[in-house]
Image 1 (cartoon, rainbow, N blue to C red):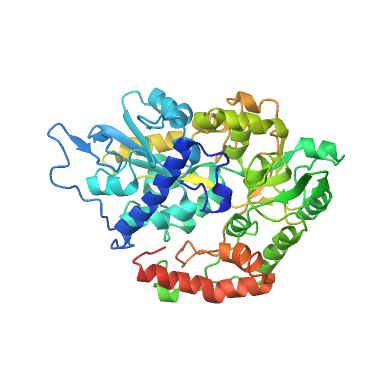
Image 2 (spheres, helix red, strand yellow):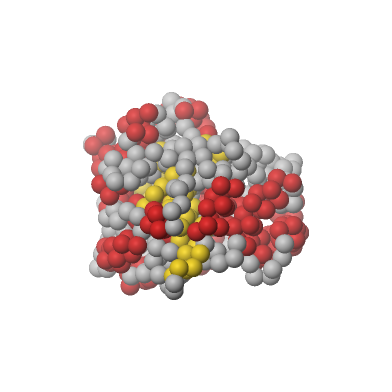
Length: 509
């Protein structure tokens, strides 16, 4: 499952046989889920997760059939946690029984069990052996879901009716949202139809990775925290160069994520008269001065001769012929941990390839570039949030767990395992990466630098997962359009046509 969106950035270099099978199954799962959701209404108060006759055994156990034919069940007295759309959750299984629990247990599960010894925890992750549609058909809705709020509330959870306004629950539990990362809280609210469907847990933050070997080879100073795009562009020009048969690229940043997570907090949908407007009333604006400023900034990097966009995974090994020939890339902390060869972030089958590619890369990391000097605005947060569905059989226990997960104790633990916490006390920040031995030789002081951009003007809108890839990857890189034309065509043709097509297919995203 894509960590952000289905783009070339999400390709895994040197994909193992198991990884290939897993990704293939994932694509099929998305298609199956789409079919299952076509007839589902969009309102959060509805649900397709009605228990089937005979699904529950006399002993209070619900069997969840799945395409793999693997037995999977949840007992009535178990708190069922389902985690989705964060690749490390899926790692660590085996071909015979691929219940990947290694990452969850290390970072979350063991701590939850220690804190709540009387709670019986049942955990699963997408997509082996079960998927959302399997759970919905069986009627045993998870008690706590961890998923990406940016795209998956509207795409998965809301059509299934698995969200509720948690505002009063959060207040009852004494969770102080004002103490959490503002950008993450506002991101969840922007998808919550005027309420609060979830609580952010952590951020797979985007940072600037750089290969010290290339910088040292050509005598260029390393980038620093707070570097501007102008400064990074100058470095990119110097390091986009040929040396014998070796070609080096200077800088790569995924253009789709760059627009979707833009550092001005721009939201493409125009506010209207309702939190749930009819599809025909959805209006999009991509041609304002601010959108053009953001797009123009990226355009120069894409047009830099010899720096053609492929995938940010080329920082390690992606589509380029040789590993370690990309000087700088904006990528996520989970990729940093994988490139540092942490076993929690690398599938066992891929470990040998990663170790070989690592010989060509000496990792440096700092904050991603900012739009202007003095700015501290980095991307809108690539967050994961927790949701308690209204059908949860253990809402009180789930709320207790959620409250614990945003406490300083739990957030310190999350940070120590190489993700960015949503609670950023000194103890939490100082703990970053301390549980990942492979990070100890890397200066990660720039990880918490800056402020996540806060999405704005989202009230009275409905989020649709619109095809922003059309702007750069279609119209600029393939069609050869200028930025203004690409934005105009996306706004006036691509996005309206996409929404019409989705509605005709029975989808609400």
